[in-house]
Amino acid sequence: MDRVREYRQIIKRILDNYAELSETQNKSGVETVLVFDDERGNYLWLRVGWAGDSRVRNLTVYVRLRNGKFWIEEDWTEQGIATDLLNAGVPNQDIVLAFQPPELRALTEFATA
Image (tube, rainbow, N blue to C red; front, side, top):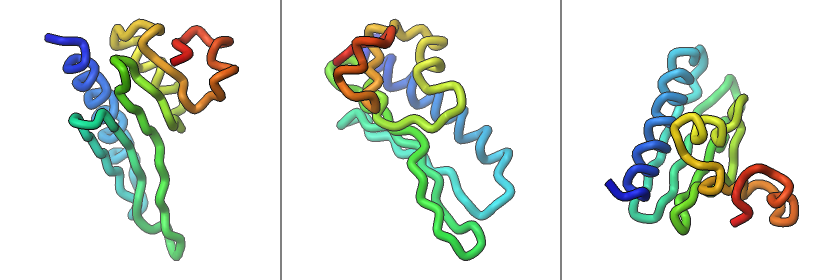
């Protein structure tokens, strides 16, 4: 199996696990929505719905597969989606913390681009 196909499966499995956990703990009318776009390499975890009179639209995780690497654009998980990727066997040089400014990425253990 090629690396891109494997990486697609890894991120979908991780986000599916988060969504399942989120839904079992859900006591409100806020829904977990996963968006997988394999063709363009975009993977999102959203929370949408209503909490009382307030509209909820939260982007929890946004990961892109770009140039054979995971680009983490947004991550509001407790331990960090990068940790989950590492635990799934993805090498740190294939993970970019894109939410960090480019000049700070060199100070992390992950890829700069």
